[in-house]
Image (cartoon, rainbow, N blue to C red; front, side, top):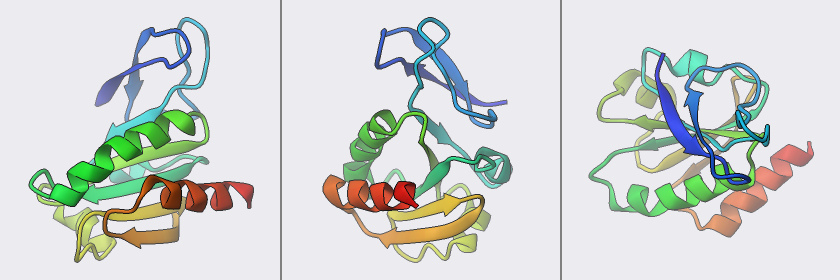
Length: 141
């Protein structure tokens, strides 16, 4: 099982957050909700997105300039929406099936899922306020 080390925004403790954990990741020390930002690929995408939380899928590539511009925004959003939104990053060069599933003709392509169903899709580098507004609207439903 793959995982990522995440620093708790509340107390600074480093926590290992698995890609496919059920529920919401919490800090082992203070039990605050942790930012949930994970990498996934063709083999583990279904399990990585199997959550009741809103899932923001980032279809990106390391050579893509706009993708690199969006990456820190997604990290901030994962932190700001800790416990409510999971961010799943998929490298389209290494994961052609997932890329094809979402018809990622241009990158970055951001797809927002609720219970495995696409509820929003944004193509191209979007400013943080646009992403926040879209997420807020979907969380309000």
